[in-house]
Length: 266
Image (cartoon, rainbow, N blue to C red; front, side, top):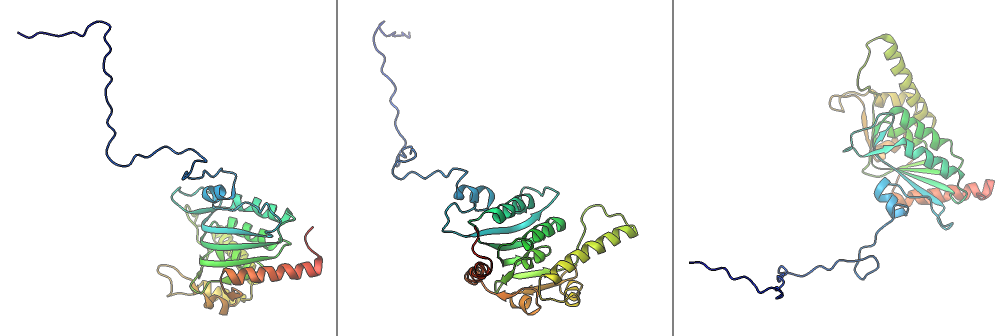
């Protein structure tokens, strides 16, 4: 026979005991407590670098140079897949306008590591840079391919790293192509726009640039030329081989020349 024992009415019941798991206990940290990780608000420079990959305009007058990075693929009118590293031209153009208007910015350093991208978006960025009244210097790190070439030569002075490369090739079309003479005429006109811009803002001749563009036997399944470091300088496409130190020295030199001729930016 089984019997059930009921607790007496009104007697307190023991509370269950919780045994913590073995190992060190991690105490929750609050902002400001010792050892807590600082939280970067989205409006700070660090927050903008994490979210947009761009620095904000300097807030202190002791920094008179703005650094702009153009990396990955230049995104134009079509939105690229989310796994692509892109630079959106609608982000770059307002920054260029703000830099031109900001009296505390005396010079612009453009750092490129891009595979190219949208032709019209790349030309728009290049036209904006070349039309700025403030000194500009470009630096190609890693690669400045395809439509990145006009952006590189759009600055007042251009540098390329010793191991960086630049690919010169004809314009290609993606998607639906209508096989009519007008399509090829439009493509040829777009090609002429790129050739004219590059030759007008660099030391390379049109004949040499077209020869590099249509060279066969160097690129797999394509025509064109890959220029590595000093080769880009010897062809007249880039002004000099150098890195960040040389680029900043040249930019400061151009700023000093501008201040001597036109006076400092007010």
